[in-house]
Image: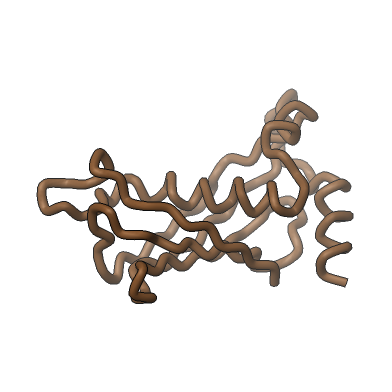
Length: 135
């Protein structure tokens, strides 16, 4: 569907004794991709929260194919899988500066009303923005 790419470097503090990016950092990398995907669509995650919508992760799958190393320049591709309803799902690919595929992942988040803490439909402003880009 709709994809976006961001680039970032593996920082020294993100590595283990082997100079590989520690596996526990990858969910944060994926979050950066999702936040920037929304921002480039014209939607602020912060504003979404301010209007009563929260997006907790309900499923996360990561496939580590090759390690990212200290100072690697990574490209993270974030792709919306389908039109969101009560859930929104993204797929990810991480490549290094040599265009080697290092990691694939997918994440599913649920739209939650911040007051009732119950699932809710995707906000209309998000669906409108998606319709503008898709159509």
